[in-house]
Length: 291
Image (cartoon, rainbow, N blue to C red; front, side, top):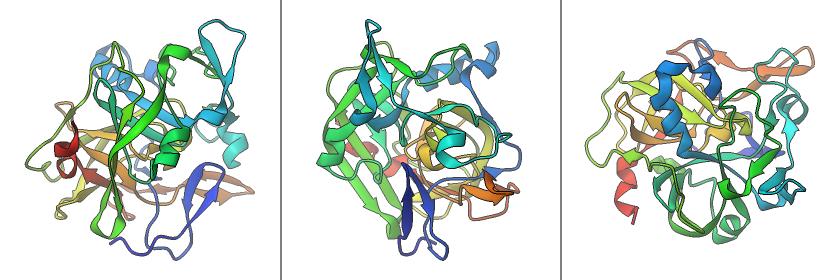
């Protein structure tokens, strides 16, 4: 299923090259289920708690000093500006703050995709930012609390082996994260076929989005399974939850992102059972490597 890697880098978003056998996670299946945190409603408090333990991965070069005490300024562009999306594309006006997603598995350990943190030099330049999302709907996301910004101290384990379907990185943060509960990983067995799934992350680097309504489409490979989550390039490293809140795996690959319409870009759309699907590296392939 996965063949030779061939990608172009446009800004900070990875997109597929025509004819390539491998692309990164991007597409809408069926209805667009992506929601901002404030749109979830009071009955979704559990999803909001899970989201608190996810983070956007950005670059230290995009973080600047601020005159606001206790805050740093983030250098961002709107989705419309960065990706030339059409003005009616969902979230077109929202800021892009990073290029991948990660999630806590211990108070100072984060998991993401292996292609997001590929080397110690990449680790050194990465910034991990929690609460990059619209919890109330009115936040100014061009600023982030200094206490919510972390650095990558070192890589604990990393693998990026596309032919085998393995794509994960486990990194240690520069300090312990307080007030957030590490997420639980599946450590044995595997998710059931057609099991319901939820993804939380940062599609195209946007503020936190929660997308329910997906399920397991293909479940035979021991290293990864295929889902139909509504996910984009910045969702690489996003946790994929089962109904009990256990992380089944890490979002790593998928369909193409945008297609052009009248000179601007719109989300590529597929039926729930069509197109290639989104690949998820199973948690069982790396859970034993978490210290």
